[in-house]
Amino acid sequence: MQQVGPQDLGKPESRRDFLRIVTRKKAGKPAAAPPASTVAANGAAHAKVPPLAPWTDPRMRLVRRATYGPRAVDVADVRTQGYQRWLNDQVNYTRIDDASLDTDVAARWPNLARSAGDLALVNAGTLRSELQQAALYRAVFTKRQLYERMVEFWTDHFSIDIEKVGYLKVIDDREVIRTHALGKFGDLLKASAHSPAMLAYLDQNLSRAGAPNQNYVRELMELHTLGVDGGYTQQDVEELARVFTGWTITGAGAFSFNASRHDFGAKTVLGVTIPATSPSIGAEGVKEGEQMLEVLLNHPSTGRFLATKLLKWFVTPEPTATQIDAVAGAYRATKGDIKRMVRATLNEGWLAQAPLKLKRPFHFVASGLRGTTAIVTNITNSVNTVGSLGQPLFLWETPDGFPDLMEYWVGNITPRWAYATSLAASNSTTTVRVNVAPYLTGTSEAALDKLNADFFGGELAPATREQLRVFLTGGTFNETRMRETIALAMSSHEFQWY
Image 1 (spheres, rainbow, N blue to C red):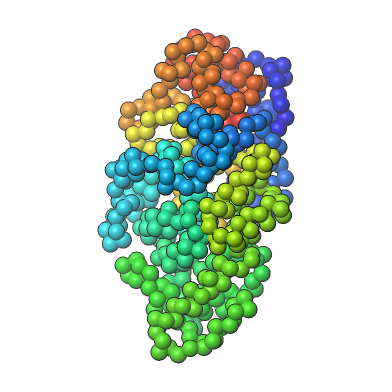
Image 2 (cartoon, rainbow, N blue to C red):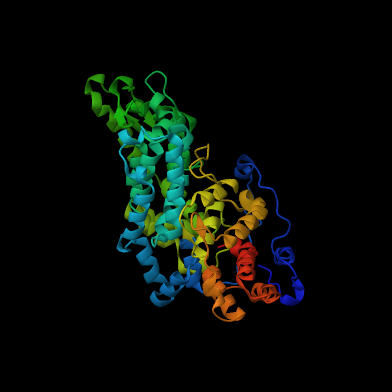
């Protein structure tokens, strides 16, 4: 990242001046986000990812990547515990007591814990809102930050549009994604394969002998396991579709194997031959699909595909062969232990050299709420902001999940600034309240120290701090001026990245 000194920036006399100055040399003119299809097809999608940030502490680099924003308490914890111990605690997330958050979530959104039968009776819009609100609330307030980052990762990996499947996605989120986010990938894949939400979303419930539907099995190979270049053919897709005939759901929204819909003929997938059997074996026909799930889990392309995706999520848009080999090796050695793969991915040396990542809207809004230590009575407006910034939660129509590409999101910088201003000014007892009193107990320099700790993990660039200082001291040092300064800090180039 090009370093910009105060002499290069000029004096900001207004909030507009500040935004113009701090983005002029660093960010350039914001570009409109291209369509997802264009981004996906772009072979040089990451050519303009910024270089290293002036963040020198490897512990803070870890906190930036493993959380939704480094709160002062996170900074203190990682500096006390050290890189490896802090990471170990986050990976082994059940050791972290989050009971108070669980209780809070259960009280605010009780429908999320209900049975399928009860959920079927609840208004679909209500369930969608509750799921969205709980997701953002957890990201902001959980102590298990790395776990929530992995929940977000797997939610995109096994993406399901809630508009198509309704209440079934609530169950999928609870029993597939959240249950296995830091468990074994094999358990996660099998839970997804048996998920009524996934089967309904990808039309597997319509598949039957004589008319096999290829939607689910194609994404099972392309998006869930092998990757698009993982070594399978169209013939493999067609044969695997026959293997999974009969995998369906009941009217009550539960997984079911319907033997009368299964194709019991011989099949060959990825070089594995499944001999013909008699329909008389009935429910035993489900074992063909279970066998092929094991084949996919053990295929060498799966470990490499997951390793590449995890490295892009946490480290770099262009992982090296050495990095991919190391993380894929952890997959093979542990039979798909996600904890071990994540630990291998969050390599201290790799993070020290990692380029910046642009916060997606969900991440940006969560980091704003974390940085302000906001008191959230109702998080609806914040969820709506995530949607207006282009990431309406659980509403991505295609099965590839929201893009994890800078180019897709870089065009929404102006509405980010608007959100920063709105959040910093919020002082509501019914929605969100940002208390700035702690910033006003000392000098303006003390206020900047606190802002640095709250929003930047203590690593605010001197040039940006100087511009904030000039603005803060350019008027009366009071609540209004402090709120405006917080908004500017959130609007700065540095706060957009992690």
